[in-house]
Image (cartoon, rainbow, N blue to C red; front, side):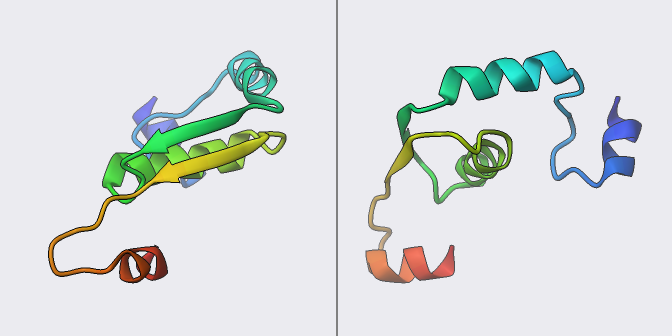
Length: 80
């Protein structure tokens, strides 16, 4: 499974290979507004990326970011 994923150019070491799984995710998130914390971290970025790629009909995404030491929130959002 890892080899087939890498040959497709995925960022993750796993893929959603089943079209049924992708379709189920799209149906579940269609029209929903979801709240995500930790979006500035590694896993949060991947989760956000996958949601945006796989679920075009998502109602909205609310992200919670916290200020890091010595960094303003505007600096964090500009770096993303």
